[in-house]
Image (cartoon, rainbow, N blue to C red; front, side, top):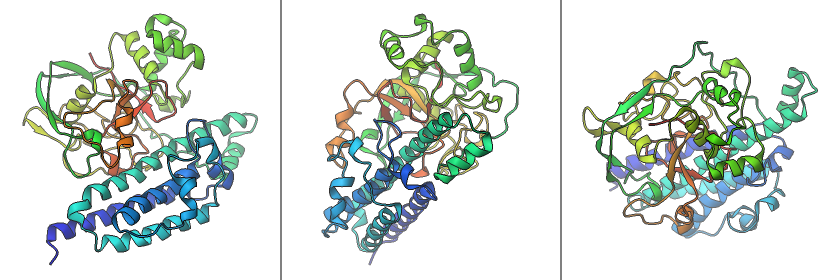
Length: 432
């Protein structure tokens, strides 16, 4: 006799698997073969490789290692494994219908196995697989954004409608027009966070290895901005010569800037409709320079998480800034629902107990912290997932973006990248 709790867990996993997969296929609807196979940047695989890798990983962990089955489509092992081909050799891909057939064949067997799998023993692994797909889909979303930016630059001699038609023929969708925002500026509104202990991290089944273990953390009092830095605010930095003045940059940041020779965020738009949207497509170095420019700093990871998750009045922890209700379209901008940024004050229902807006969704937020292990850390499901990145060089980002699926959206989730990366959907907020 299967207990109700195990059966309900099985049903929840089924729902998340299917919801996540619908979002995956939506990303690839109408995409052309060239976009499917082409690299947008040397550091990122083609979007089609990510689709095949999702199927490969699900097959490897759930069907081969747990169910003891033979590989589905073993001819794809070398192509879609993460540790065999370099990224530049991942461009020779089967057509989209063939890769979708691969996903469907794996998923059918996975759902059959789900009916008999010992979920009480395997729940953490199933949750990992769902989040693995979610994370790769977010990568697909920003790689498609890079393709769109490149194509727009190449087609500058064409009128707007012709450019849009050209992109649509390639299956590169235009983001929805920005949500209208008030023309008055979002005012700088710092929130005071009292000193004291709070619980950081998570031991829940869905928590990844780097989120564990849940532990008490003490912080002195600090202030953190109510909103992420907006495009209007960042424009002041640009127009004040922020990219030309070494006084605002660290030595490493200025060295990075000389090599990259950039003068604005990667996803910058002069459209005033974006004034109250968060700045997006900045590196950690750019975020650090802006903070220096206005006399503030980036929050530590712990400061960010306390402002997002801790209810100081009731001395309780919240899974999400707004409480326990799973993410939806009235609480935050996520899951490609808009496929673009939104004004930083567009989701008042999603504010944290401290009063911070946009802590989940819209843009990832750089923190001052380097990516490292929490007390009691143990690698899962393999050492290479997190531990190899505890190198003192990767910086932590928090909060998710407009492309993050709900299965990977929570206050304790940790993302990490090198400080010079600006291709991701990232902004920041300031602290003091």
